[in-house]
Length: 268
Image (cartoon, rainbow, N blue to C red; front, side, top):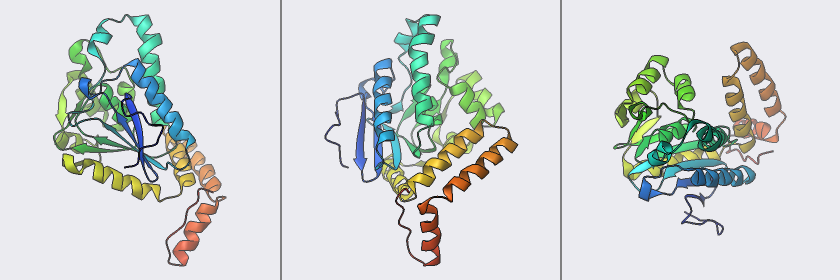
């Protein structure tokens, strides 16, 4: 994997490259990749770099080491906080950064290599596609601490899973294994740990071969439509596909199909 010259491998979040695929790694294995404000701010700057780099067409998110994807927040830090400072400090930052992840104009893939609890599951909920290692566990255990999910988990999980399933997970705080996460639709697939990154990278490369312009407009259509009533969402889709048909890539794809050759997408 190629590492950009500007990448600092000691940073709490790193960005590396393999062709058109960027790999974002939460890099705090000594604390199971737990998130704090400095780490979130570095992640935000990494997202800005990805958004500005047209040569990155798909992004894989993972955690350093083999024990955790993101084990959540720093419990001692949370215990030291009061409501208003928390609302204007950590909570404001994590909501802003997670929304930035969710609305990134490039397809994102979670390679969940270990524990993904609390903020780790909430981060996964922001990513488009999720691959989970066989021994990993997920969950929103905040209720066992006298809290509830506060980084978007209450709203994203209730929208992405059957509401009764989402409520049970949040009310009990149960940690679920990979098989259960797959069964309830929280992840796309479960793979052996040693195959996690190869499969995530293979999927990312396949996506990166598609038109970056059309992928960007597709993500915007999906994100905006999810917050609209169906009639409005359908009208939005109709307008967006009209924009796509003004692109060179759309006509290149159709022409390549008719000529029985691979399409050469340029993002125009």
